[in-house]
Image 1 (cartoon, helix red, strand yellow):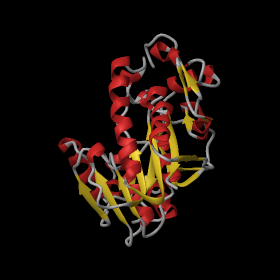
Image 2 (tube, one colour):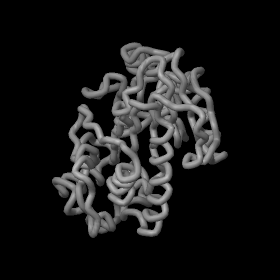
Image 3 (cartoon, helix red, strand yellow):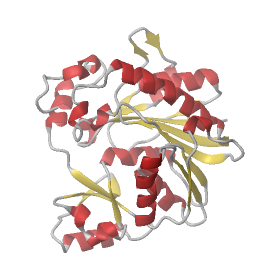
Length: 302
């Protein structure tokens, strides 16, 4: 938000973001560098020792023992190129924690590039599990493949279907829809988002997100779990999308005990009212965990 007027275009959220002054202060602060241990290749304590010996002073996140704040160009190390860790905002750990994939499960990552969440899932489901990492954009698929290869992921299949038209022969234990969004929550690293997103962009993306979340839900097996997540603050892309799924399918929103402070989903926005269970979704703001912002809904198919 550097150089922007206080609040900028984000002022539209002033009434729904608790502690507005703390939010603005966090947005102006330097974003810490955070890495996630690739536990398929190394234990967090061993990575800590290796990076400490090189002067990066890793500090374990108290709520995520596999994550570290670091100082310096850690991406230039041999440990990075060996795939021992993934550079990732701490807030991006949360959708995978909510998905809670288990060893041996079959998981679909419907919008997978560049692979931060998918590689996390792959480590959790283990060699007997299967990750289907779907990315329709050819250029973005290159970054996905590069990260899967660098981190040594052997339990993944990569597909390139439009997410809203993913074929339905297979049913998945869990589906992650980390949807393309207006990315307002990345404003600490992307100055272009400091004034919020244009309304036309939000409307266009929300239409796609509604199709993605319904398709992802239809690909679940009975009893399966879907996590819908974005890195934006716009209710049109968050609570409104979940409300569409609740209206069109028999999904239920499940609460999840997140290890960091969160705010509940909102129940109204401008002229729209949302079902009461949307309050079980969570909003994460930069001042909650000194990271970016986002939205997460954990949904189950009966």
